[in-house]
Image (tube, rainbow, N blue to C red; front, top):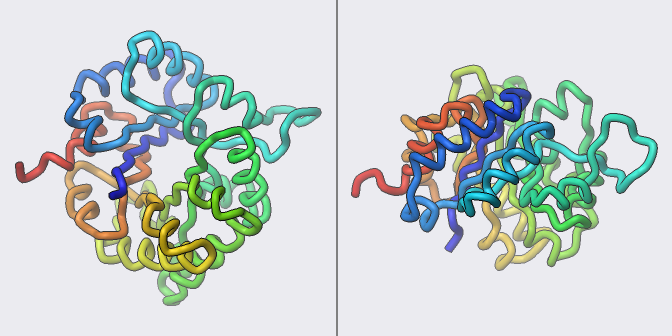
Length: 258
């Protein structure tokens, strides 16, 4: 049984004081039943992580947290970069790797994403490995093969024990921040193909246990339908996660219909 994961990616928003306020409001809207049913993570900017760590540790909150990127290098003369060991020391559980905005704006290749995944694993961080297609790829009908290529490139050279530690997030790029949403059927099609590829490069057991998230204009109004799909195990949530009440509603999808 795969426990759902809801991860809020705050992107380049919220200073450390605002981050504390949003996290506190989120926690206020959740109870033990929610945490028992769903793993909840927030992914703030680097400058907020220490403040979030202090809040979560000090109040013994059941939230987890992580970072939005990391360097493929362990240490050294890499101005502006943040290493996996630094994130590990800050208590991060997760790190996003290969987000579509990093790929598009910073020209990150599958080979670089692969190095970052290996750096994350080397420092006991769980990579949230992002894959997805642009609108032109979707319209050409080659979206599944495109995503499978990204999976192979990003996970190349990983051992089976390492594969077990990966979370994958499928983000159709055309549905991020555009208000367009892939249908639950669209999400299921690609997430099922991802799971099949993990079975090929890993094993049926690894594929069956791996959490595959959907990311693309996720809201409280559409999360329940998305989560009904058998190969969708949670969401990587962008803009909606900046609203703590909305994020709490998304987490509470599990209680809809009770």
